[in-house]
Amino acid sequence: MFVTHVAMVAALTASLNVAPEYGRPDLRRDAERIVAGGVTGVQARVTSEGRSMVAVAGVADLRTRGPVPPNGYFRIGSSNKTFVATVVLQLVGEGKLALDDTVDRWLPGLIKGRGDDGRKITVRDLLQHTSGLVDDYPYPTAIASSRQYRRHRHDTFTPQQVISRAMRHKPAFAPGKGWLYANTGYATLGLIIEKATARPWHEEVKRRVIEPLGLKHTRWPAGSAELPRPHARGYTVFKTSEGFVDTTRHRDADASGGLISTTADLDRFFTALLGGELLRPAELAEMRRTVPVATELRRIWPGARYGLGLVQRPLPCGGTYVGHGGDILGFMTRTGVTADGKRSVVISVSTERFDSAKRIVQIDAAVNRLVNRALCDTR
Image 1 (cartoon, rainbow, N blue to C red):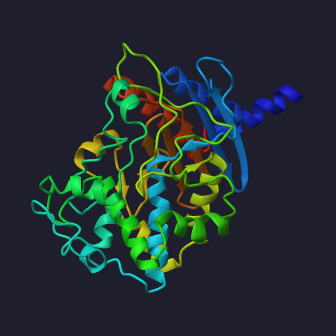
Image 2 (spheres, rainbow, N blue to C red):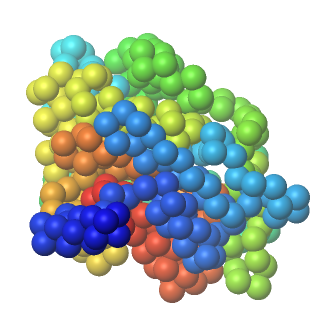
């Protein structure tokens, strides 16, 4: 009877086209597929209506071969941009600044170069990467070899220095007339937050986001090149012949990507933000208003659109999800929350690879597979 009953249930499920639920074994297998693509370690968290499951794969340290900690700290890279955008939009909601304010309204003369003009670039342009600014980041995004890493890993640059370097380049387009990802824009937003509040951007993030949400493991590293424990070591492959280079220790980027966090804290942040806990409806709606990303990026991320510090992407099961990834030496972060807010995912990969376009695409595909299957809740 039991066998017959199981067969009947299976047949009914198939007839209703109901997909099996995505569970912990599926999450573990998908994490292992990412490692098989050529990375050292992965920790992944999937949350469904408040209940989380976590899986790890690979190793935390290539020397000791110890396991990846399921609650490990990591550098979140550009996922930082959503924290910064949240503070900016809170200030907008408080009437302390406006999305249509120009850069010159807050930082007169700072953006002035070979066609760049702070009188024409708005806060919205900076948030949405429609400013036309061209990055010339000295570190860490410009590091292209293990030798450069060892030589420059403790270098520091002020936001003003970063912006000054960008002014050596002609803009990619007139403000609002195109889309180009620009870390320099978020370095500028950090200065605008400081001018509007009289406090550094990371103090405002702590006061307005980290403390209210109880994110006990999200922090600004200040001048330290260390990661708190526990953590997986972060590795970078600059050249295939060099193999994995330990790039755990370095000084982070500024408002474009400086925070350290955990999968639990990032999950709490993104679900709270998109659930309306941090912004009023009007400002959250502005954040979610999107434009198409650049053509070359759409080849990698079909259907991707960018809001104000948020990325929107389609799901194969229908609908969309939003979040913001991050890539910085040693660490790749990916996040996503479904449109209804019921499911979310956060992935930390403790390896970045620059040695092979094919390898990069392979790893990205494995990460996307996990995201899509987890958010669609299907095996």
